[in-house]
Amino acid sequence: MIQAHSLPDALDTVSMKSLDHSDTDNAEGQVRNRATRTRRQGLPMRLLRLFAATLWFAGGYVAFLLRKYVSGKRPLHCVILYYHGVAPDERQRFGQQLDAILRFARPVAVTGQLPHEARNRYVAVTFDDGLDTVATQALPELLERRIPAAVFVMSDLLGQDCTWKDYQGHFLSSEELLRLPHDLITFGSHTCTHAFLPGLDREGACWEIHESRAKLEKLLGRRITHFSFPYGAFNEGLIEICREAGYEHVFTTVHQPARRGINEFVLGRVRVDPHDWPIEFRLKLHGAYNWLPIAIALKRKVVRILRMSGMGGALVP
Image (cartoon, rainbow, N blue to C red; front, side):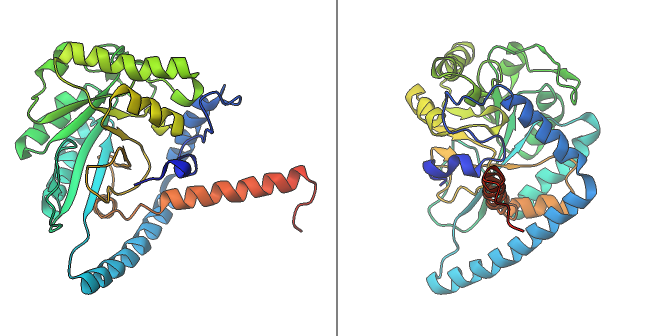
């Protein structure tokens, strides 16, 4: 489980020390700009990450064999994946990814308990934002294979057009949510307005976290016990607010396996997209991209040291 004191350093978004941090005016824009830069890095960066993931997987497999040899048991391994949308031309590849999940792991719901004996690799599927393609493109593939999923939605944006430049469509409406099969789909909160929570004061953050749960429970007639942080941005104060609001699990975008199964309060997830290469997707299923938080934290520390050296006028020659 990700320890609370290390949460800001583990983030792959803007790091925040507290809810009332003074340098948060442009934080949301920084998150979006960083995501755009990541997409533009293109093939070289993607290949570099794939190479690093392959090395991580190889080292992890050796460690797995050693642990199995020493203890005689297979360690528990649960990966939680998160998607955003599935475009019509991506539906076939999404279905192929679901087939890979069935081939290499056992799909579980985020509300489920894993067996005590760790005989299988477990995978949970989640969707952030509640885009309409979850119902039109993803759901039929999930239904065909009976794979459960969790959908995190914004209570005040239901049915509205999505104005994000990289997506054409709308957010799921109240009627569309109610039509989703409740035996297969778990609903969770993604705040009221998709707010960048570290940029709000405590009162504003509390409203987004508490009110979204209350509105969704009233609409759906069921308890809402799961929460996903917009932009993957969170800190210790926000986690405590989620505890106070009565959530049982909160989900981040930090690449971390759920080592005790879906029994932890803070759960990391791995981003996947229908256009992932098959080898990328399989490595993600095996947790091979879990090196990313370490690399990001190391990069931040190096940048911090260089900045401090520059301020002191004593850069290393």
